[in-house]
Every structure is written in C-alpha cells, then in structure tokens.
Image 1 (cartoon, helix red, strand yellow):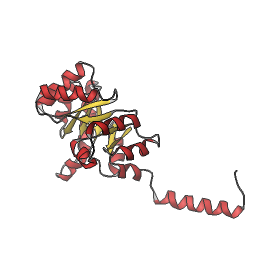
Image 2 (cartoon, helix red, strand yellow):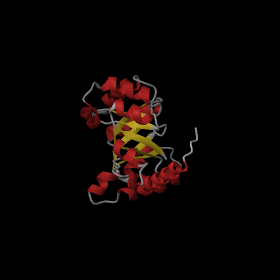
Image 3 (tube, one colour):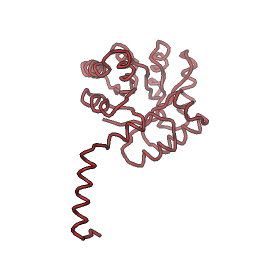
Image 4 (cartoon, one colour):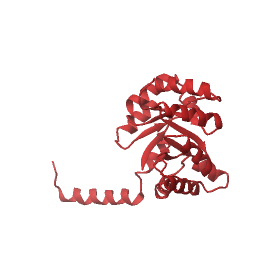
Length: 217
C-alpha cells in the first residue's frame, strides 16, 4: 500500500520524504490555511521535495471554473493531481480532466456508489473518508471493503485512497481491506514505526553489546 502524507507543511514534508517511505502528498484548503503561506509557492516546494503524486484541490463549485483551476494547478508541476469534490460538477470536471491527460483525486467520498461514480468518471484516485464516517456512527472500514469489491468486480483502475485516517490501526485495517493508498497526518506516519517491545528489545541488545567491550567499527 502506498503511503501519502496529508499536510501542507513543506518543511516537514521534506524531512519525512527523506525516509524514502513517502509515496505522495495530499493537501486541502484547510491544510493550506493552517500552513499560512502562499499556496503556489508551497505547492512548488512540496512537488520538489516529494516526487510522487501531490493532490492539490480546486475551490470552485462549477465545472467550468474547476477545470480552469485544475489546469492552473497542473501547470505548477507534472506530479500535481487535481483534487475535485464528489459532486455532479466535480465529476464532470473529473471526466474532462482525465480525458485530457490530467490525473484527478475525487475527494469527500462517503458511500460505495459515490466511489462507483468517480470510477466511471475515470478518476485516478477516489478518497473515502474513514474517520469522519466513524465519527458519524458508521463503519468507515466497511466502506473500503465495499469499494474494493466493486472495483474488483468491474476491473476499475481507480485507486482507493483511504483518507481521514486517525490512527496506526486505521492504516493497518485499510491495508487489510485492500486500499491502494492511505493518506495520513505526519503524527500518524511517525507512530507507524513505534512499538514498546521494539524499544525494549533494542535497549536490551545495546546493553548486552556494551558489556562485551567490542566495537563493529
């Protein structure tokens, strides 16, 4: 499963990318507002730091303006993916952009039939929001399983990009359910390394090695 980072903090993304484990980035208007910097300058820095897909979202609500915004975003760097909302106008924009060679990420997906519509529009990615469904008393992971089954039934190439992920457990469950990608906050990414038994085992190994008085180098 590919791991994307959900952030617009260019400096932190550059640091995380140095691990070699970051496959892409997703941004949204809320994350850009939180970063507090020029949108296009930030995008250019992120695209230079991470060679994989970088989702940048349109803010227009009508198809024609979405397309114009999407083309402007695509001009920033070749790895930009145009993020559009899962609305009738967004799906029309998705189809136009995809038909003309511009990859899209259809966001704010909360049902399997919405994901089906995104796949029929030719979306490169569709982003089901797991955490927000859980917050609403529904099973977000069940949505991933439903979408996986539908896409496999009809060989849709659209990638399932699990979004609104809150925990390392969400990452694990999304991978088991068959998500192609997961986009996660930096704090969750850092937690994926962690386990108390790993820390305890390493501490014991180093203590025993020190007692030998030897050196590898």
